[in-house]
Length: 209
Ligand code: SAM
Image (tube, rainbow, N blue to C red; front, side):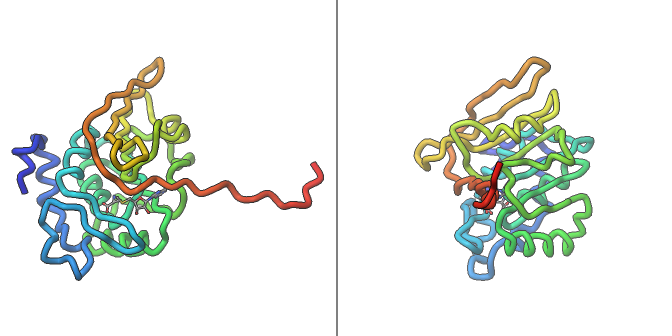
């Protein structure tokens, strides 16, 4: 994989990618393509992201081993596994339970004990664990990052998220929380599956107030 030639220069990121066997996260039918630089289908219409994009987004996150990191969109667990090698503690949320259960088995098999998982809507973040020094979203929202997520970013924190909604217009965006607000940088174009937000629970219809 030509990661270096395509701008991945952070040696910690390159080492973490080398240490995580992508074939463990790819369905049996696609094993022969596990190390090709392409996104691949996983169950329930979702994807494991292209390795170059995983590497570039991880590098853009500027993560270090003192930080608490939130990932939204566990999927196969591949990105989470890489992040877990680079940070102190990784929290990851997935809305599709069967995917999360498979990912959890992989984390156990690889003895990645600093990952905590949650089944649910990641656009709401993880309030009881906030603030996070880093947040990485691996599904495309848009046009702006969900407010619950930016609110859960620590001062000095960085969030990387694909935004834009429409496949033709998505870009990876990097937010930084400063003392006075948020800065936003558009990085490069991508094509991610959508970040889907679950509707709030319906209130009972017989409310009287
Ligand atoms: N990070 C994954 C990996 O390494 O395999 C790739 C993730 S895939 C491109 C996007 C994932 O985001 C899907 O598994 C999808 O179900 C999940 N997703 C979409 N909207 C979500 C939400 N609101 N909360 C949590 N997960 C969500």
